[in-house]
Image (cartoon, rainbow, N blue to C red; front, side):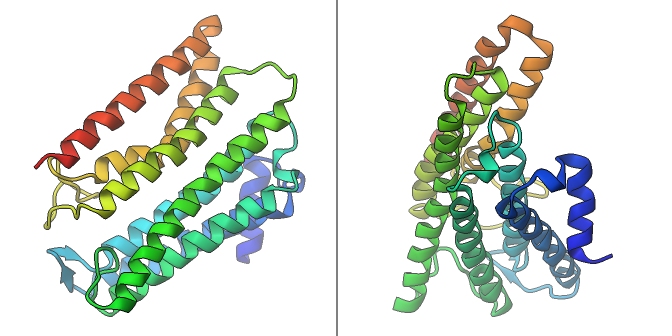
Length: 264
């Protein structure tokens, strides 16, 4: 079975492949390509034991490939949750293009640098590497800006429709993904995390490490809409206050982790 046939099979069962726009289908394929690329990199990491700042050199490319896949697929998923044909809006192909161009630039550069045994982030050892580090920052802003753009498209598509708890959660999640990721990204760009392996799997540290806050920022795209979906199904008329309370709690957690990350 080809990659396109696999994507079609998965999408037909999950969200109705025939109803998806060409841009939505392209994002689905892109997300699954990232998953497919992750597998050989993972296998390579078992044989290539080089490290950078006490961490395996292939850890960062794998994280970014996994994160990119989730980001792209979630964008498509959320565009099917809300009223209106958001995925068929004239803006959606541009949103998809922005996601693909910015994230692919980051993944390719990070992977190339890993293959060379060099860092991508915070590597300003010469003008070229300093420029690439700056371009990665711009790409990261562009990537999360796609979510604010999508929120605007959804808001316009709502028109006079009643704002449901799920739609409210989607809007909150998308806007916070942009706002919090931009802020935490620039804070992280100016403060390199501690070296060495920290928490299992992710490698973060509890103190003086902004990556946990940045994780919450980027994944507001998933966590807040899922909370809204659960609230709508379980909380009845208290669902919208529940979404607001969860969103405020999420924001408070991000602030707390940011303060811990900036300590020292």
